[in-house]
Image (tube, rainbow, N blue to C red; front, side, top):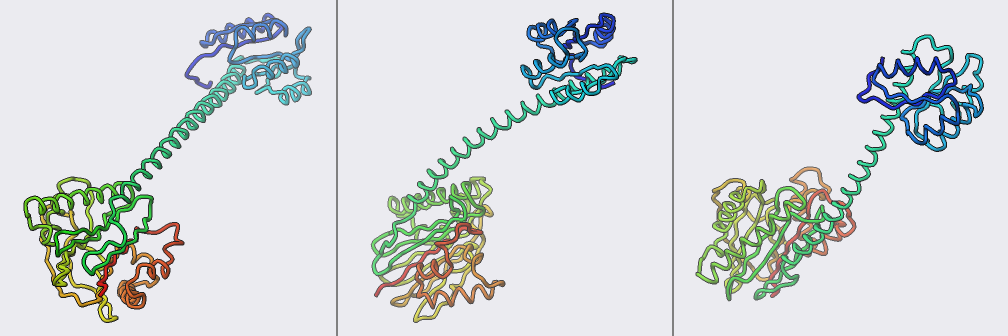
Length: 395
């Protein structure tokens, strides 16, 4: 016998009083609630007033036929389970009843009432599964609507975050002395983990950096905001208290690493930070795990600047090296995030680096050349953020 978690109210419509009584006694002993009707008219009346969960309907009823009762019930309660009972010779009626909407059928005489109970339990279980599925679909639809609303909010938040991030970037075409800056950021997602900045330090020096935060999306973009804030604090300390850290690239990277590590964000970044004295045309820079190294273009020849170091924020205390070089007139410097390597067609790193140097020379270190050559304006999906920062000496 099938086991159901709950009992049910059952309506039996049958003109055989003894059969009804036997069924009633048996099902009530099993924990069901039984209501009964001796004909079709009474059966419909009780069906409408008592709203049973299962109907046992005899097809051979006096007056209103069992088939008419079935048609009326299935019309008014489409998903109500109905078990029809028919005389052994009434196969045509059974077929018609099943077409109308009966869930199961048995033929009289029913010698063993457990057979009837099994049929009732089977249709009742099916009915409850249907209802559970309906509830599940409603809950799923509700969850989908809530998810869509959350995604809409998230998209709005991302748009707001994107707007904030864009406002934090420096103006295009800024100049310090004879040095001119330009940049382009192509994010793989709506928000970028790449960031660039350049700013005046004093009457003869300016600072600049390119940074690439580990990961993608909102969490990485948040670290770029933190980076901007920390750098602003370092610059403010120089302006207010003549703290020289801002002009010492190796100390800046070490300080940033400690701050980001201590924030426990689970993020780190690679970075190149440089300071140029535009009066003496000297570049001081430090590299914190960034790839590829900056590319210097002088007299039509491109080369990578030397240097390496730990990613910034991957450990609490790290030591970085300061490199210094003299800059020639009309020098050009290009910096890239590591996303550039993802879209270069060559397969191995050595070939990618050779191509990158060739492109810097061929394109005269112009961002527009790289955007066009690599088709960045046409790529809707990028495997990683691709950022380019360039500066050049105009005279």
